[in-house]
Image (cartoon, rainbow, N blue to C red; front, side, top):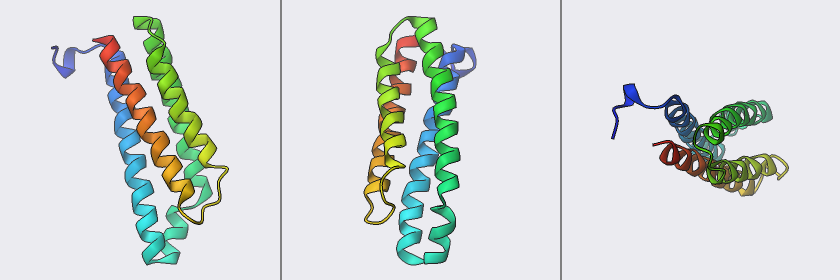
Length: 125
């Protein structure tokens, strides 16, 4: 196994994307907790603009990392899995924010996207 400094650029991008997916997951959990505890803090963290910007960033980095992976190693499965995760995240934006359904779908999409990035990293090794 190579050291991180000598890894393929796609691996670095995928690891960065996985880190962002983790931060998104932390955001979703924190928002849910804050909404339950403090309505004012929850409304700031649960603002639709945060979700829209986050999804835009996720889609941009996902397209870059997963698309570059296809070009580098030729396997489409990681991109398909990652695309499914992005689709679930995008679909979550259409759900009502009350009841927790949106948060569950978003977190599920984030985990699927992270799996796609991990598969991309494995394929590039």
